[in-house]
Figure 1 (cartoon, one colour):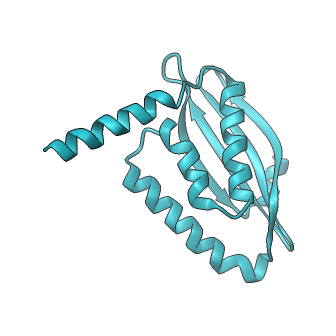
Figure 2 (cartoon, one colour; figure 1 turned 30 degrees about the vertical axis):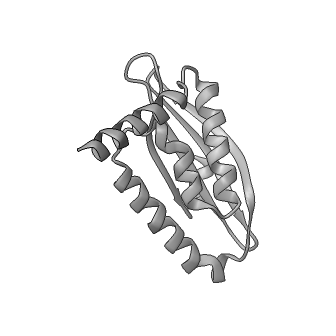
Length: 140
């Protein structure tokens, strides 16, 4: 029981020190850090950057990170070495949603890296993070 209480206290203290996402610029800055980390070939660390702001069980986030790392290893032969990340754009939907799109650059191809945020009250939270190879969608 003491271990559980200690773990919960640590979890809440980490979230408290994470700060708040109060502006669209705050969400962009956070997504930029995550995209740059993804573009450095560190998928798990990319998800870890977002985790304090993501109201999803950590087990699910860790599973997404593992799946991403596995998929990136599988496509590395086809896509080549990862070269970094570039900002593409931001879209806002009303006062409650914002989406930042980046590309993960590889030697032979690129993937979209998208962070979506939701603002239920006064602070933004991560709503979804995904990557795919649907680069034609960058022009929609």
